[in-house]
Length: 356
Image 1: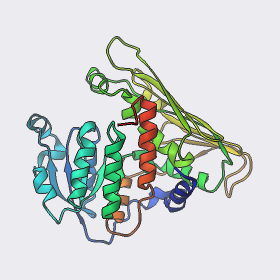
Image 2: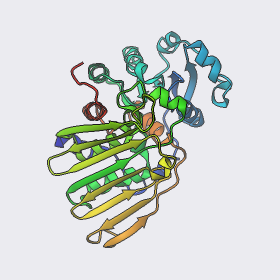
Image 3: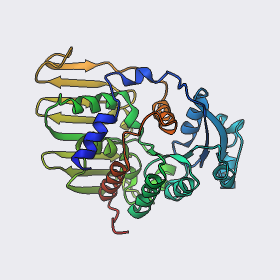
């Protein structure tokens, strides 16, 4: 990302010290008619449940799952039991549906998104945005051309600890950033190992993409990216991975280990600057430690724990923000340039070619 684009993000993100304290405020605008396509993404049920929960904002028309076996498998889940099942054509052909959450498996996310955009729909697109760069460019070009929004499902954007991080980076509390270290792993089941083995980037591609998005948010486009991937078991899944990111004056590492029984509590993101350090561990619910070389407002020089507010739910912040965007009340803080830089960095870290 260019300096101008990163500055634009930091100036328009709206992140405040306790930004999520306002998430419970209902929008005064008309409810948005929304639908969901796909149930195969790991976040699919959570996203659909969130839209149903935000009854003051969304009128949920229903959802689509055109894989009959998958539909039968999930139709008895509480979130889907009383919902209306629609075809994709019904969703895309309904002019009253303004927003579609795209929650297919990874390889169908971007093609589905393109069809939604061509039908004039704003979209929430879950991550990551496919394994090729050209189709990702195409959907962002289509959205920009039509004046539509693509909100990527990088959930840490609306995590209060990361909102706090983005705020203090904007205000220069940490000085010049010199180091970033992040890790996001878990103990993968045999089924998940098999599923993720189809992607060269494995867990780094599917899970640690959240951290790469945050890294690009605070530092912009890396000059160089390298990924290292190894296997800890005898199957095809490269489950232990780390990527390095080089910037003009900073180095960063992002790792993902899917053979870690304590991966959840060990998830962390640390930013080191010339005037301070912020560490988030775990990421959810976040615990934040801040070390400052001098007083900053009410916060004193030295190391202190920063309390974070409790949020409504994992995805409520992003969908409340998206509703304001669809209603024309604000612009999305992360533009297409940012999302394409994240996708390129993610692909390089995952060992995927860019010349597709």
